[in-house]
Length: 107
Image (cartoon, rainbow, N blue to C red):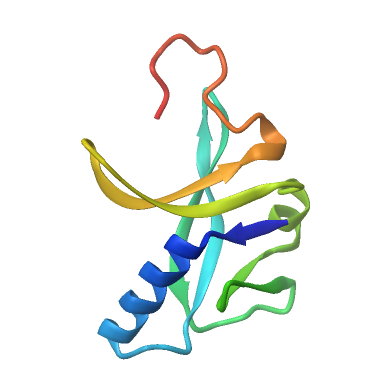
């Protein structure tokens, strides 16, 4: 199950308010495959499709395809700020939670 951390929830609520769209959901989608496995993306969305799963975490509505929800046995969406910048990060802890051993500096 994907959870939104408190820090990410605060940032998302602020973003939605600034955009004047507090009713939008956060869609989680497959963005591609890299050396560390499936890479996920995030987008604001106002459409829920017939085969979508909708969950709520820390006041944020999450929407995703059923197959994505099944692949997240344990994970979260966090907001990080460091020397590389700031932004939202998806961690799929059920899939190893990290880069693995590709040797190429996965990000």
